[in-house]
Image 1 (cartoon, rainbow, N blue to C red):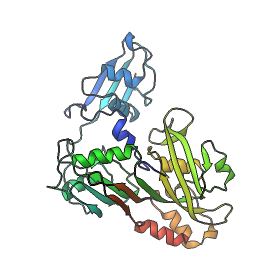
Image 2: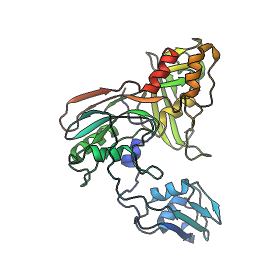
Image 3: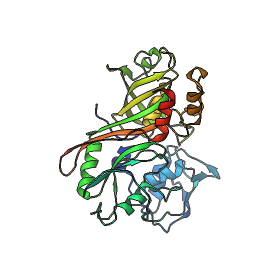
Image 4: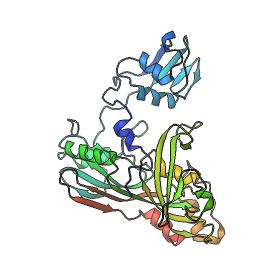
Length: 369
């Protein structure tokens, strides 16, 4: 099984969603922008209409993100649906946030470096670290740490001495990432991710268990038994209609998402396990894909506050230590454990494994999994 990228960030978005980073607005530009919809734009999507009217340098994808973040108002009412149809004569206000620093600054943050050469670096990211600076997380990120660690050894990505981020994992997910240090590595790695030409596997702890013997799971559209204990899950994933920070399985729209899931061990009754240890492999890499698919199967990740895993209660039959460990686990129990690919410059076959971090290993020990 080949697989793509992340539990939390869509690698396809980094390459092909049309987000024009180079066309970002002037960093000095902030504050409200005022728009009046002309007759020629009657019935257009909000993001498209705003992009047509916006000053040069403010891309449609940037405006879509601003709308979904609550920055757009019509007659004083916030509208978060970028697909909403506009009407001629409407007055819209879009608040531009204060600009973040143009370039991340190096920070001497310790890194768990698994491999490094002149072209790339593989790191084992701890839970709690954001990969790339973003509003609300402009310091303490993996990029800040890499700028300090790789000082003097970045040969240039896109003409700048900066690390090339070709994939991401969520802040509260731990595990392996590969980052380019040169343009040649950046292009080669990007092509491998786009072609799903790499090995990537996650370890997770979940409530219940995704089992091929579960008739409820196999009764869901797009779920099938592919043999060897593996479930293949294929759905569409899109933004949740009511909560734009969440993703959800959608009947239409969004993007196709394919996951391969296998229960490695479970605790509790065999017919209805209370909790399980799961291997997750991704054929596509949509935002929150593993977390969405596991929740949709009725098996949310332990500790996942967004998709229902934080609210579950462990049955007392698991024992006091297990119940306490499950209730106290502070994050989604997800770890990027295996990463394999051909070196983008030398062609050498490379494969790395990262053991469970201490918090997940302690959970495994308490559960006997």
